[in-house]
Image 1 (cartoon, one colour):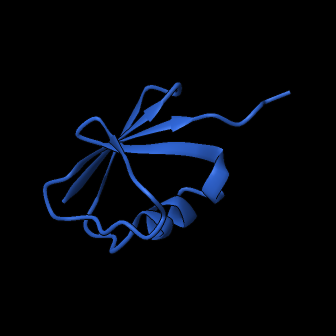
Image 2: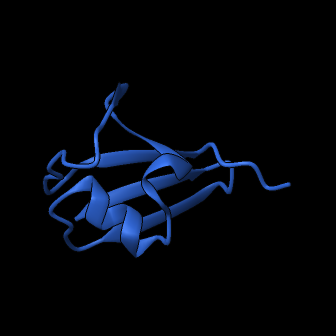
Image 3: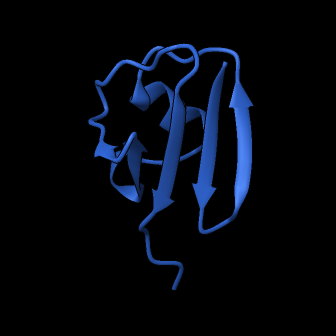
Length: 65
């Protein structure tokens, strides 16, 4: 199970499994440059693998107009 905290929406989501950051972003409808993906205080690249038990923070950085 992967736990995802979405900022600034203050949402907490859980997913059974995603292999990579890119797969997670696609599932959430985010493009690569729409958000910072953080695990344990470190930025992740789109090809970074996700593991069971990960806590991921998604910090949206796109302009909403």
